[in-house]
Length: 297
Image (cartoon, rainbow, N blue to C red; front, side, top):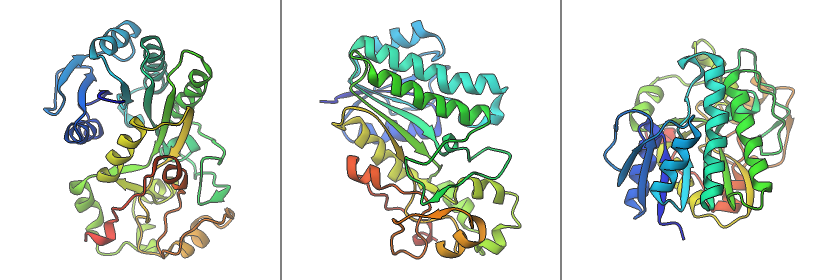
């Protein structure tokens, strides 16, 4: 039974939200972050450089955690040189998984990204073979950020094959995560039709992230489900709100932006259905996203 959760990167926006939610659900929480404490929700704080194996092992041992939620990575590729970004994604994950295995921590949740597929921060248009994308879609990243996310998933595969590795490992492929403030700033635009969005400097990013997003309220619920999940091995999960960021119906978005992508069965009846298939998370984790920006304008 999961009672104590160590959250790496709890000083960040996403990590802080996870700590707040887990605390509210009755978990004991420990924030493992580099630098001074910047949140007030965790029951304990351990200053930890996640790129130093000894510090990760020591802090995780001291936290006496039953599960780890690893969010402590560089969140965007423009924060420093590429090798540092890759190192943050890949090596910190290796350290967390190795320490968890050695200490008998059975459950680990990892922050992967839509960038693992070759979207997000890529300079060229995303390669989309079929829509809605699911966990079987091929991965074609080229940037340090995307390659790091793909690598952390491969590292998780390896630890799942170990007899002494964590029993349950989840990689969550996050899109853009919005809270109420970000949602107000973003979705306040009066015209969110595809034609208007094409004139925005953000259009390339929106196309490369499949017009996907998720609200923090749904995100923290999903994280909680992974930390109490009962499956064995490593599983990847796509994460998305049930709708897209545009007012143009999904069928028209497909025709205009992704004309060469195969149309898979699986688009629900909603007119603005997401281009990301979250059915696996619903099946294995009983998670169904609820929050839609168009209901909160």
